Length: 161
Image 1 (cartoon, rainbow, N blue to C red):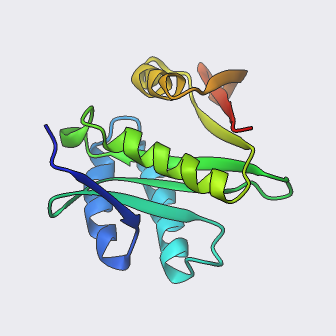
Image 2 (image 1 turned 135 degrees about the vertical axis):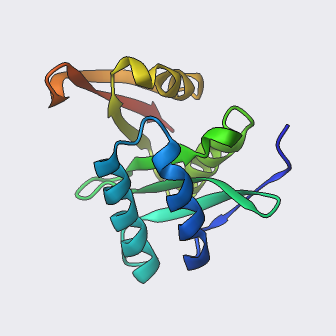
Protein backbone atom coordinates (compact mmCIF):
# COMPACT_ATOMS: atom_id res chain seq x y z
CA UNK A 1 0.00 0.00 0.00
CA UNK A 2 1.25 3.46 -0.90
CA UNK A 3 1.70 6.20 1.65
CA UNK A 4 -0.89 8.99 1.61
CA UNK A 5 -0.75 10.74 -1.76
CA UNK A 6 -0.43 14.51 -1.70
CA UNK A 7 -1.36 16.43 -4.85
CA UNK A 8 0.17 19.80 -5.64
CA UNK A 9 1.19 21.95 -8.59
CA UNK A 10 4.50 20.96 -10.12
CA UNK A 11 7.60 22.97 -9.22
CA UNK A 12 11.01 22.95 -10.92
CA UNK A 13 12.48 20.55 -8.38
CA UNK A 14 9.97 17.86 -9.41
CA UNK A 15 11.19 17.60 -13.00
CA UNK A 16 14.13 15.31 -12.22
CA UNK A 17 11.87 12.75 -10.54
CA UNK A 18 9.33 12.78 -13.37
CA UNK A 19 12.00 12.48 -16.05
CA UNK A 20 13.51 9.66 -14.01
CA UNK A 21 10.43 7.45 -14.13
CA UNK A 22 8.88 8.43 -17.49
CA UNK A 23 11.32 6.32 -19.55
CA UNK A 24 10.30 3.30 -17.42
CA UNK A 25 6.58 3.73 -18.22
CA UNK A 26 6.09 1.18 -21.02
CA UNK A 27 3.46 3.25 -22.84
CA UNK A 28 5.84 6.20 -23.26
CA UNK A 29 8.02 5.92 -26.34
CA UNK A 30 11.35 7.83 -26.30
CA UNK A 31 9.91 10.52 -28.61
CA UNK A 32 6.95 10.95 -26.24
CA UNK A 33 9.28 11.31 -23.25
CA UNK A 34 11.07 14.06 -25.20
CA UNK A 35 7.80 15.90 -25.94
CA UNK A 36 6.61 15.46 -22.34
CA UNK A 37 9.83 17.13 -21.19
CA UNK A 38 9.29 20.03 -23.62
CA UNK A 39 5.76 20.53 -22.24
CA UNK A 40 7.07 20.41 -18.66
CA UNK A 41 9.76 22.98 -19.51
CA UNK A 42 7.19 25.26 -21.15
CA UNK A 43 4.98 25.01 -18.06
CA UNK A 44 7.86 25.63 -15.64
CA UNK A 45 8.97 28.67 -17.64
CA UNK A 46 5.49 30.25 -17.47
CA UNK A 47 2.94 28.26 -15.42
CA UNK A 48 0.07 30.68 -15.99
CA UNK A 49 0.76 31.49 -19.64
CA UNK A 50 1.77 28.05 -20.93
CA UNK A 51 -1.78 26.81 -21.44
CA UNK A 52 -1.00 23.79 -19.27
CA UNK A 53 -1.70 22.85 -15.71
CA UNK A 54 0.68 20.24 -14.29
CA UNK A 55 0.17 18.58 -10.93
CA UNK A 56 2.22 15.93 -9.18
CA UNK A 57 1.37 13.10 -6.83
CA UNK A 58 3.77 12.83 -3.94
CA UNK A 59 3.90 9.79 -1.65
CA UNK A 60 6.17 10.48 1.28
CA UNK A 61 9.27 12.14 -0.16
CA UNK A 62 8.83 10.67 -3.66
CA UNK A 63 7.08 12.06 -6.74
CA UNK A 64 5.13 9.02 -8.00
CA UNK A 65 3.06 10.55 -10.80
CA UNK A 66 1.96 13.60 -12.70
CA UNK A 67 -0.85 14.89 -14.88
CA UNK A 68 -0.86 17.62 -17.51
CA UNK A 69 -4.13 19.13 -18.72
CA UNK A 70 -5.38 22.32 -20.25
CA UNK A 71 -8.21 24.00 -22.11
CA UNK A 72 -8.56 22.99 -25.74
CA UNK A 73 -7.79 26.04 -27.89
CA UNK A 74 -10.71 27.58 -29.81
CA UNK A 75 -13.36 25.74 -27.80
CA UNK A 76 -15.80 26.70 -25.07
CA UNK A 77 -15.47 24.51 -22.00
CA UNK A 78 -13.55 21.65 -23.64
CA UNK A 79 -10.36 20.45 -21.97
CA UNK A 80 -7.64 17.98 -22.88
CA UNK A 81 -5.82 15.64 -20.56
CA UNK A 82 -2.50 15.57 -22.38
CA UNK A 83 -0.34 13.37 -20.17
CA UNK A 84 -0.82 11.25 -17.10
CA UNK A 85 1.85 8.89 -15.84
CA UNK A 86 2.60 7.03 -12.65
CA UNK A 87 5.94 5.48 -11.79
CA UNK A 88 5.62 1.76 -12.64
CA UNK A 89 6.79 0.91 -9.10
CA UNK A 90 3.80 2.84 -7.70
CA UNK A 91 1.03 1.89 -10.15
CA UNK A 92 -2.31 0.44 -9.01
CA UNK A 93 -2.07 2.15 -5.64
CA UNK A 94 -4.35 5.14 -6.22
CA UNK A 95 -2.04 7.87 -7.51
CA UNK A 96 -3.47 7.83 -11.05
CA UNK A 97 -7.03 7.85 -9.77
CA UNK A 98 -6.20 10.77 -7.45
CA UNK A 99 -4.53 12.72 -10.28
CA UNK A 100 -7.37 12.30 -12.76
CA UNK A 101 -9.90 13.12 -10.04
CA UNK A 102 -8.00 16.31 -9.24
CA UNK A 103 -7.89 17.32 -12.92
CA UNK A 104 -11.62 16.70 -13.31
CA UNK A 105 -12.36 18.75 -10.21
CA UNK A 106 -10.22 21.66 -11.40
CA UNK A 107 -11.85 21.51 -14.84
CA UNK A 108 -15.33 21.61 -13.27
CA UNK A 109 -14.28 24.61 -11.14
CA UNK A 110 -13.24 26.38 -14.34
CA UNK A 111 -16.62 25.70 -16.00
CA UNK A 112 -15.34 22.86 -18.15
CA UNK A 113 -18.01 20.70 -19.75
CA UNK A 114 -16.04 18.13 -21.77
CA UNK A 115 -12.76 16.31 -21.24
CA UNK A 116 -10.99 14.71 -24.21
CA UNK A 117 -8.22 12.13 -24.01
CA UNK A 118 -6.38 10.76 -27.04
CA UNK A 119 -4.42 7.53 -26.81
CA UNK A 120 -3.19 4.55 -28.75
CA UNK A 121 -5.33 1.44 -29.24
CA UNK A 122 -2.31 -0.91 -29.24
CA UNK A 123 -2.55 -3.92 -26.89
CA UNK A 124 0.06 -2.30 -24.62
CA UNK A 125 -2.58 0.35 -23.78
CA UNK A 126 -5.33 -2.04 -22.60
CA UNK A 127 -4.69 -1.23 -18.94
CA UNK A 128 -4.66 2.51 -19.70
CA UNK A 129 -7.92 2.34 -21.67
CA UNK A 130 -9.56 0.29 -18.90
CA UNK A 131 -8.41 2.91 -16.39
CA UNK A 132 -10.14 5.68 -18.36
CA UNK A 133 -13.32 3.69 -18.96
CA UNK A 134 -13.42 2.89 -15.24
CA UNK A 135 -13.38 6.63 -14.54
CA UNK A 136 -16.41 7.26 -16.77
CA UNK A 137 -14.78 8.03 -20.12
CA UNK A 138 -16.26 6.63 -23.33
CA UNK A 139 -14.51 5.81 -26.58
CA UNK A 140 -16.13 8.13 -29.13
CA UNK A 141 -13.77 7.73 -32.09
CA UNK A 142 -11.16 5.42 -33.52
CA UNK A 143 -8.86 6.59 -36.31
CA UNK A 144 -7.21 3.61 -37.99
CA UNK A 145 -3.46 3.81 -38.51
CA UNK A 146 -3.25 7.31 -37.04
CA UNK A 147 0.06 7.01 -35.19
CA UNK A 148 1.54 4.38 -37.52
CA UNK A 149 0.27 1.49 -39.62
CA UNK A 150 -1.59 -0.76 -37.18
CA UNK A 151 -1.54 1.86 -34.40
CA UNK A 152 -5.01 3.35 -34.17
CA UNK A 153 -5.85 6.50 -32.23
CA UNK A 154 -8.68 6.35 -29.70
CA UNK A 155 -10.52 9.48 -28.63
CA UNK A 156 -12.16 9.21 -25.23
CA UNK A 157 -14.68 11.69 -23.87
CA UNK A 158 -16.23 12.51 -20.52
CA UNK A 159 -19.16 14.91 -20.27
CA UNK A 160 -19.13 16.87 -17.03
CA UNK A 161 -22.55 18.48 -17.29
